[in-house]
Every structure is written in structure tokens, then in C-alpha cells.
Image 1: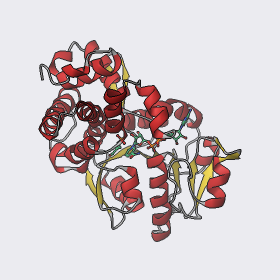
Image 2: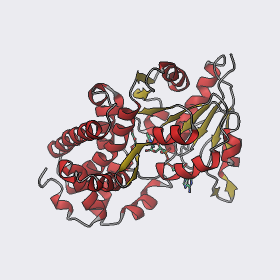
Image 3: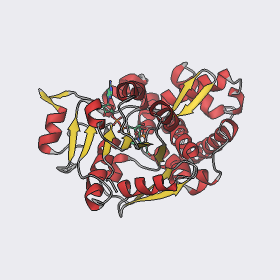
Image 4: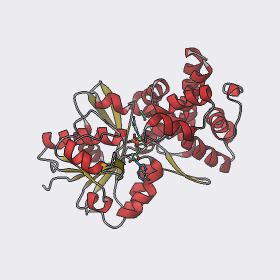
Length: 345
Ligand code: NAD
Ligand code: 13P
């Protein structure tokens, strides 16, 4: 049987961590995967040198994952169309705001029999329409797309601290989940499979909004009781949202999967969304400024997801049913007084 050729599309903090894991696993399962792993890297200059040249000579992504050896079989490729040429296992792991342009570049250039997986956390909203990114990828490229999401702060996974994640595969296609599990699982990065692409994707997207709320609470100095309450309310709003607007989400995803409650907890304790939201309260600076100052090129998702969710709920006339999501939107985008965070919850 022909071996799958992997391509990792995206090379930020999580993208580089995942590329490093894939690089090792394709060697471990060389009967299943081709050993060369091209990674599409959005080109940028670092101290006068191209980031792709730095990665291909030092084997480190010095900007987004410094200090880790990606492996000699992981190749940074600046040309996306070239990176995906012949690939049959496409790993989408870039901030959601760049996906549309990427898909436009590779549409019509996908190898026959290819499959994809989305590691992107966010939702695609157009007025009253909402889609998970795994569906966007699947529909645009005409290939099956799974989803991976979980309690996965990239720096901890990269450091080999024990972590879990969830892969959601399409109905009747467990074999996709098994293939992706081979590509991503390590003794310290455990993977559960579930037939629930929507639930895995939506939990990953919506927990970022809850993490912003947790960060705002930290900025206000509210303590652990408040943060736990925000997590609980956030989980309920997540569950209600999934069940109201998507008919294929499995109930066990929320409490039994890393993609559910575990990701919500880790993101409310650590993570970039929590950290910048705390600084938003303490410094009075805008999220754009804080992203630039605190994240070294990495991107925030939570405030954008809060806006997308607000747009969608407003179009469906359902804002009142999701008071925490709504509060985060108003504080982050409409100058609502942050001291009202817990009012009316
Ligand atoms: P990141 O935020 O660390 O990095 C930003 C990336 O965007 C970089 O690779 C940069 O080169 C790229 N970029 C910047 N401008 C661009 C442009 N104009 N066009 C295309 N690309 C551009 O990225 P990440 O952490 O790898 O996040 C990718 C996805 O993974 C997100 O959906 C995120 O929510 C999710 N995720 C992240 C983590 C984490 O801990 N970092 C964990 C799990 C999931
Ligand atoms: P942040 O984007 O808030 O760092 O969250 C990372 C994540 O998704 C952890 O699972």
C-alpha cells in the first residue's frame, strides 16, 4: 500500500510542536508514512535571514518554538502550493484568520485520496451561518477532514509533559482517526478517538472565549471561586450552544474528552487568551497592543471568537441565552466596564 505523505500547514507555536511530533512519528511508522515532512512556513525575516532558511539549517523554529529540535526530516517550505504537492495527509494548524487565503492557494491542487485534519480553534461565521473549520476545509477541498483539539498548551506538549488530546473523526470513518493517531500520539501525548468532529471543534473554539473571561477575572483580582464559576457557566454555555446549533455533537465530548472540560480548564489557568485578558484589565491597553507586546508574533483567538459568536447569536436573536459569551464580547469590543463581568450571570 502507498505510504501517506504528510504536510503540516502552519508553523506557529502549536504548528511547530506538531511538526516536531510528526517528524518523529513518520520515522517510527515508516511503513505507513513517507519520512519527509514538509511544513508550510509563512516567510518572514529574522535578523536579516529568512525564517525558512534558519529552520532548514538549525532545525529550530527560532521565532515560534525556540529551543526544540524539529528533526532533519522536517523541511520548512515557504511556497504553500509546493508544500502540499503530492501530500495525502494534510494537517491544518494555522490561526484561523489565515485559512481562507491558504485554501484559495491550494484548491484544485490536492492529491487524489488525500485526507485532512484541522487543529484550528475558532468558528467561521457569516451572519446567521456558522461552520467549524473542519467543515470549511472538507467542503472547499472535497476531502474528508477530521479535527484534533484538547488541553494542549503547546510549550507543555513540546516539553514532553504528560498531556491528552481528542481526535474527532467523521461518521463511519474510524480508520481516519487511527491514521491520525499514529501520526500524533507519543508516550507523553495521549490521544482518544471519538466520532464527533463538530463537538471537538466547537469545544476548542468556545473555550477561548471562556479563557478570556477567566483572564478578565484574574485582572480584577477576583480569585478562584469566581474563576471556577466562570468555567462552569462557560462549559454550560458551550454545551447549550453546541446542542442548539449543531445536531451531531455527542454529549460525552463535554465531560469525558480532553477537548471538552480539560481544555477549558487548562486555558482558564494558562494560555495566551487568559494572560492577555488579565493584562487588558491591569494595563488598560488594547488587545492588539498586548498581542504585539506580549506574544512575539503569536496570535490571539478568543476575542475574535467572542465577536464571531456575538455576530452569529445576534443574527439568530439568541444573545440572551448566552450571557457569559455576550459579556466577554461587550467588554472586549464595546468598552463595557469590566467590573460588570459577573453581573447578570
Ligand atoms: P501562533 O499564534 O503561535 O503563530 C502565528 C502564526 O501565524 C505563525 O506561524 C505566523 O507565521 C503565521 N502568520 C502571521 N502572519 C501571517 C499571514 N499574514 N499569513 C499566514 N500566516 C501568518 O500559531 P499557533 O499557536 O500554531 O496556532 C495555530 C492554531 O492552533 C490556532 O487555531 C490556535 O488556537 C491552535 N492551538 C494553539 C495552541 C498553542 O498552545 N499555541 C494549542 C492548541 C491549539
Ligand atoms: P491559548 O491560545 O489561549 O494559548 O490556548 C492554547 C490552547 O488552545 C490550549 O489547548
